[in-house]
Length: 410
Image 1 (cartoon, helix red, strand yellow):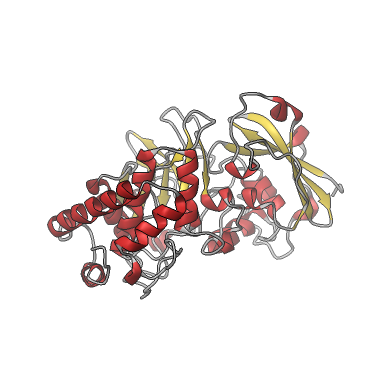
Image 2 (image 1 turned 60 degrees about the vertical axis):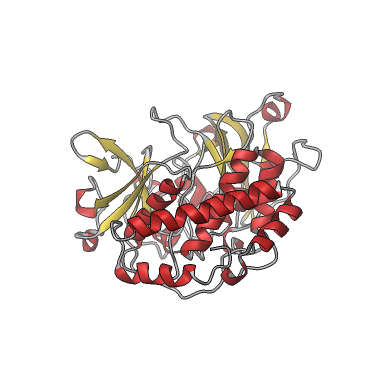
């Protein structure tokens, strides 16, 4: 393998930078001169702006891992291990993992080798499984290339076959999330919570609950999931014609690695960014989602479960909602993933805590409190009428009913 390998970073299909492997398992990112000099350049991420709003252009090398912005484009946990095996690369070697997965990343970023450089044969891990389905082994794009922990993949909607995984494994306008091996009924739970969120007035993409056996072109090795349900959500980073819309999650915004997504920031930090970059509608939507997550006992609203979207390619807005799950039926927890302002405890989620958040994040206090009160009232109304109609196990309903009574704001 050559000492230097270069990957082009594309934004909306145009080269804006490079990731260079400089040996010793180190890599460095650099913007192209064209991107630096472009007056109306599209935004790659808020973390690339300095305190004066100017583009940051000097970056240090990173060892083994990519810099956090790009590391957050890659899958985590079991999903990463699965993909790394199929690509024939050690899961910690992120430069080569993003090389393999770069054709179907979240948002409008794609990664490709510069000058058509071929996959270096010496990168193949000796312990790899040998499946001939990844770029390293068979030259085909890998499936399951979207960021996250749970096994999920892009899917197309076909008139006759319904949701189908594209033959090349990339380019779908839906995300299908498979059932959890650890916890029963997670797809049903997420579908129900997202349905409830839409009824309350939140910005929720189209969603479906589908039989696993009805998904076309499912990769081999997943036959044990037949008879179970999968959760499907329309990708908000893709238009109907397949055009990509750029997004970034808040781990990328704050330059935090995925394994620190429960730390290094708070709901107050997110609110402060929204106050600076967006308008009152997005601030109200943030308060709505925060309140809803506390009411349903969602202890997993970490930094990667909040995202920005760039509809005009330059200015940030709060992306549509995703990953609403009531986690308390599976893992008993009295704390949220992130501090609200001073506390993570569900039992501390009060009007006083929201007032503190508003003051520290420079949000309009009346807007925050009025929105939270309206969300609570709407939640009670729709939960009372719909909980028996939603595809929820009885223990989930019981857990939420018990939990809501512990929330001061409720």
